[in-house]
Image 1: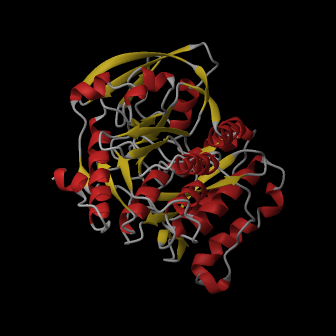
Image 2: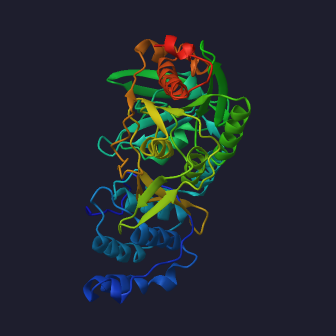
Image 3: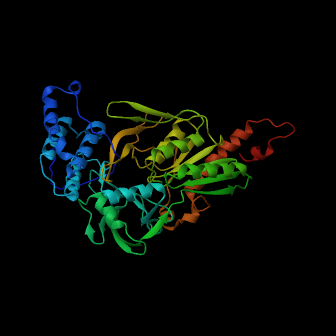
Length: 449
């Protein structure tokens, strides 16, 4: 791990309460243990002081952090604790800046500290409602640029045409170069009815987007039934985000479409930036009756394997739509369906965000999101940075990217959906052709080829 300065550096962060952890003699040699023992002498001084939260964050990283960059060094981290606890901090703001500087040395955009107000906002977001413009952003650790993961459907950002991989160059005239992601979030969010101006870099072309902030209530699932000229009823389900309501809404949608006697499904995960791990597992179990859904690998190589449990709501054929904005939990669900041969994937390669974050609440109401593992698909594919390649690569035309509206998704003007529907119809027709129906010639399907 590079030498970590206590000065303000590029920050990243989020949180949950966790017991203090102290190394034992069995875990390290005397030389490695000694700095930690020295630091522990300060423990009686940190209770109910700004140092307490600093030490909580330090302990969580020391015990649970999984390094995906090859930067973290336990010995350096132990020395850093001695330095941190030997200093004085005037108030919480001072300690928060120290934490952000400490975490910046990990160069992990997903291990982030959130002050109490930021942590509260994060919890509201995953609960299904927030205020702002409706985009999820990430920090590209190589270029150090703020990048749009995905706009949320039906929000000001989506209506303005923001796209996955757009780079945010400035916010209200302030450059985002070396800007901590938390500061960017604060600048972009705000009271409904107020404006924010983003400067965007899209493939080298820079332009400004003026957005009016709004209260955003996220309905996670939309459905429709499309009837083909051959009389097949296709259940179209668009899942926008894996928040706390998503599993319930998906269950209701599948049950409603099953009652309408659809013949198959197109599940649309395009531009779904992810969300809660447990939500993705619950939804995967609604589609898969058996098989592995996902495994998580920690820094110690331990795998937590999550499997289907025989509670699938349908066995009808399904095709899944994905694109470069499908990330995290979307990649878990689509990877599980693909690897278990439950359905085909259509669209473009997914985003490639395959790290597991644990959300920890700290003693003063602040929080930490810490990378603790990485996701592997059932076949062992490492999602992070690689993404998932669809079975059928289908790109949208430039004309579609500009003109396609939310109402067009899953319809005649949506070429990716039309490709998915054709693949689904092929499987339905082939399935029906294998069945012998006494007294008929299966003429309908003979004429189809």
